[in-house]
Length: 339
Image (cartoon, rainbow, N blue to C red):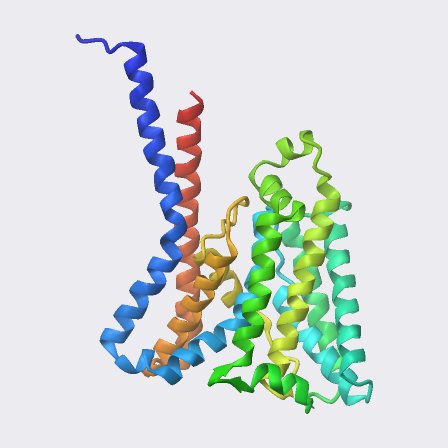
């Protein structure tokens, strides 16, 4: 029997682990490769999917999904979840529309919507950070409460919002490109800077990767979680503003479970891990475009509208399954490297 020298074994293990970590680094390109592959496949089946009008429509429809998904990403990276976000969009949209309908004016209506959403984010954060209620349970309770609050605010049922400023954001175009795309691009740039270049963003990755180690390093865990849910509420507010700027008719059904599925799918397809510690704004943008592309393609193909949500559910399940496999493989690579 030939016994390998210890140094040779270490070198082989090191090379193996290096290859494993190199694979994980390559996975950050997976959302973009998936987006490109789907675009090519759908275009081959029916070129109309990627016609110029449809392409602009795909990007435009992805804008509210991307903004809400970035808020979901911030929470997921930190190791939490916010089920109330999509229903927060419905509540905030209805609240802003009702204030405009009551004659408060756009600036005051937006201020009221922002303040209320900050309060909701604060409550969610306090329940998770200080009351120690699991994020799933806390935000599920908030989701149910927001459903009731939306119906209470929308006493007229349907509200018509006729604000030129909102129409400029959601409907108007500059050189043929919807202004909503430009607005969303600015939001994405700021979000990317926040997650990669600020203490808040770096702490999100830290506590999502290892909360105990982060606490030992001096990260104020409760305060960070509180801030995370407040930031999520800000993205909910921005999504609500974009939604009512795109559609002048506001009903209590704005957002809801469909938008929640889209946002979670976009975040997970974009490489955000439901186990925390991993995710990028660029990946979320690709994920939102994938969701919008699939939705548009199914409609172009003449798929039964009732089955669109079914396909979204399948996509989420597959993405979660892939995320689980990646997380387990990453843990094994780390364990081998530490051995």
